[in-house]
Length: 53
Image (tube, rainbow, N blue to C red; front, side, top):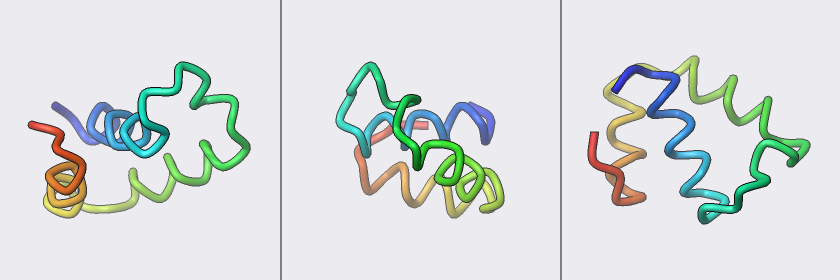
């Protein structure tokens, strides 16, 4: 899984699978923040949400 895919999986987990997660005003900011993190940081966050990468 690349950084963008992992970031989107984390965002979906944060919004608990809400299909309209992209409509939240914070979505672009959260996505941008996650994409600036390193892959190891993203993997650590993903693990906290139970996302296997």
